[in-house]
View 1: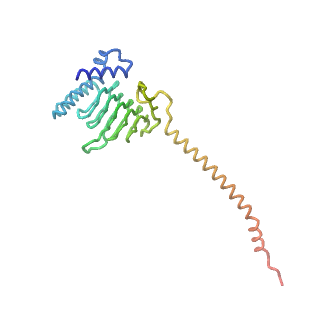
View 2: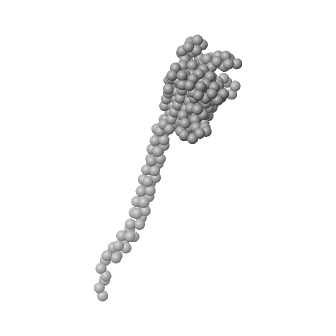
View 3: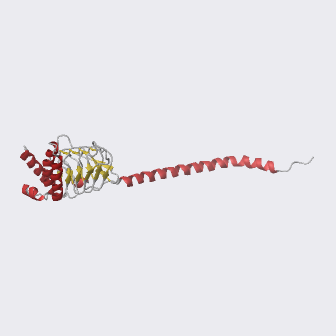
Length: 248
């Protein structure tokens, strides 16, 4: 079973990285694979309550790979850490199956209190290079986190998030029923042009300002017309009040 899972991990890495030419290439040249093997060992030690030994071996793995995965994290099958340098996975992080992390990703905590304080990534999540996913939030199945995004709130399934703080920029197209999903989004950001959420918000504000300007102009015209209609009688009254009284 162990070797079957290792082969499964290797094949999934090859499927997501065209630079991998063979299984031997992955086994000897991919720090993400090495870090995953260190994690499998240290997680078992952690479960046996050999926590110091688990942390020690985990630290050795960090020195060798540049990837820090806490032994207490829960990681599913076929995790792929591409390039990997600077990746940090916290103690209470939970990763589902077929998750992809790129270099510089942090799955970090924002609290000093005990309990769940790191993110949960559901199946098929892709987190781009340099992205920070912070706190006990949940990233939904199939979601994509763009490079250098900072995620501070729960992420719905099947959306793309970019920016600081991260915002939804587009939903993923729903797969056709019965079709096999083959699309993989490298670095969590599609190659097609993405709408800029900030620019979209500014455009919305400009439209509102234009509409308000038109309403104000209409009110000014109506007020001017009303003043013209009432100006005649007012002026007559003023003229009568200013006229001298007749002498007897």
